[in-house]
Image (cartoon, rainbow, N blue to C red; front, side):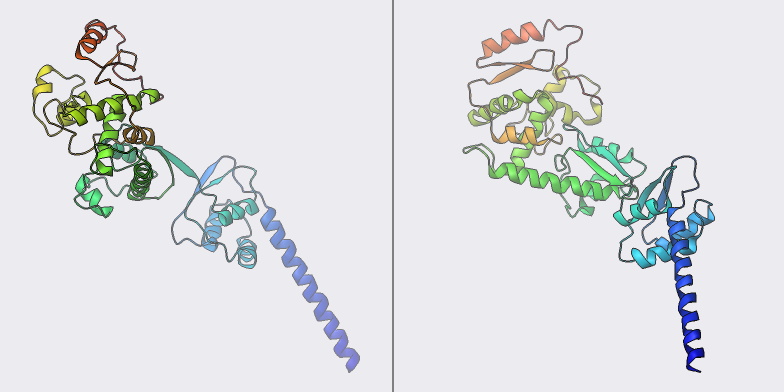
Length: 347
């Protein structure tokens, strides 16, 4: 009787070992199997999707085999891993194990969106709308509604978002990306404001942001930013009007057709610094860190005027006579390729 019991026990042990061996072999084979595709594909994983559901879907599409063993593998080895939503790239030569590893590591496909220094908020929103992989929740929202959604009700949007290249995954909301850009601008402005020069004619960091936007729109030549800041700061200190064309253009809005006339310079708007004293009420563009830094560290000197050479750079003058001579040389005898600002780089 005892011998028969031990024989039965031994048989059960052998059968169990064989079963476990078969399971291990089957699971290993299922993990090593290549994806049945002959060209790159994207697998979209929606929020709330489960690995088991995705494995079944891929099996139904003929991309995977043996879904039972793959589900078992995930449950035994990767159950604690969070499945990130987004898009995953499926490529010929990948195995099922490679795909599961990409799920485990959250290796979702990322896209980039560049918000350019000197753009205004309208241009920022147009660029967001140009990216179909973003969930477009702001398409019909007004600027005021956008700011309210960001928790900034009543705040003018211009200048409040940091120009940079941002990464996103499919399904991310346009509002989320704007929230990043808004937080980034607040961070950069605070950092730069805390290290500002003493004695600047700004009541607060927001006025420095306004000044930075003027500098950003006046020049893209890095070495000129602090010098232009110096001109504007000296003008503010002596009560001289800033008289900068980009403020006229901004105040014209959609009426601007690519050029400004003498009548435009005389036409009152809240932004026309040929007419108003001091700075405009808000920024006129989104300045980058370098322009913000320049506004808070203006270059010392005597110049009160500058005029575009036509290649994107400027001639600076300390007296009106010298300025008028520069105007005659560079403005009244313009070359055919004259530019008041540098040529755009790549965009």
